[in-house]
Image 1 (tube, rainbow, N blue to C red):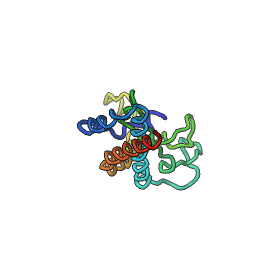
Image 2 (cartoon, one colour):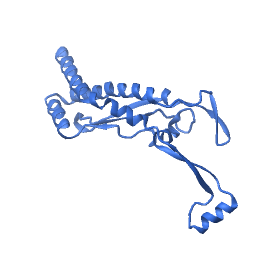
Image 3 (cartoon, helix red, strand yellow):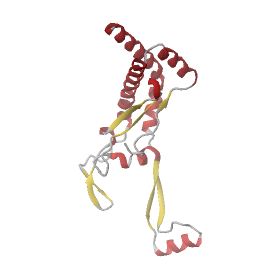
Length: 186
């Protein structure tokens, strides 16, 4: 995954992590790992479904012109995925939602998700007169000029916030399910 594609989505902190860790400490390390990962996977499925609904849908054409070349036109909503990471001794405390990436390819929208989520400036090449004006003002970058700003959509943040209430109940249920599974096998 590229550094653009993922960021920390949610982190259990404070008294909540202590409560979850107390429950996990009573389990064997492999069981605790499975319980936490299963809980996060369940929660991220909910977040991904919400993010798909909130994701902006651009032009539906199969190709688009990017920097003068025709490229595939992938959509964020079709490429959303999640990742669950763990710490040592089976304690998983964070995960992230992002976009699938095929490195060096325009087949996935990983290269523009940051623009859509946080917004971006719109620039164009500066004319000779504008370059001289920018140089006289002491600007270091004078080849382009800012002509506007596209506001961020923040659909991933809103998907996290909409599902934050469900994280701890899902974790408790995942721990209980894993304990029942272990008792059934033992």
